[in-house]
Image (cartoon, rainbow, N blue to C red; front, top):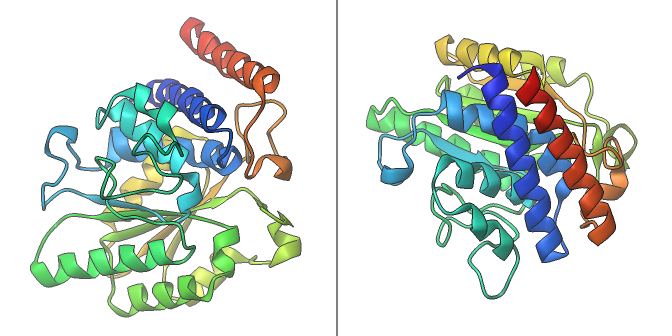
Length: 278
């Protein structure tokens, strides 16, 4: 799939993200908007998955380790055909099945229920290790937040992945620089992140997290690598695509009211219109 096609899908997903959060009057738009380009690339260009056969034991796996960004995962799954796009309106609703964090029991296409930070990447390591033991060729992908890296369990998972030489595991880290309490560099600094991961015996690739060709090339490189896991560091903008949300910690975990929702929709539709005339 071309970069332009992926970008159109990602902006359609952004509209669904905002619709879900607005309907719920709660949720996490900022980090959902920053990671959705990588998610779109995974589900529409990289991963071996089929919405019509979502439990196929040989499918690739995906774990959203930063589970509070479920709106992004749900939006991409809806566009990929796992369930109707209208279901996004049920986000966080007691009447619906779209929980505020990924729910593998009730939401088709979700491979792991997540929410407690650090547990997602740990589960992804287990999935990749299981594939090795079973002689399976499926790959496992996981998206983490840079704020999530303050969890010690994350680094235990990184050590285990390196020990078992899990070259079938790819961790994508959404480096948007902000978390619920402020800038990650102030709350709990993680840089130089590339050097730390390399010291843990991971192969590290740094890319612009909104550049689809760069993401595709990084995923191809990870797939070809043998003998060690890969971490792709995605430099992103929190709230990407919505003027007043970009690089604003205020929009980590709250929903826009009616007026600001309309501003967001107009921002995203304007970008989609520009893509159509390019």
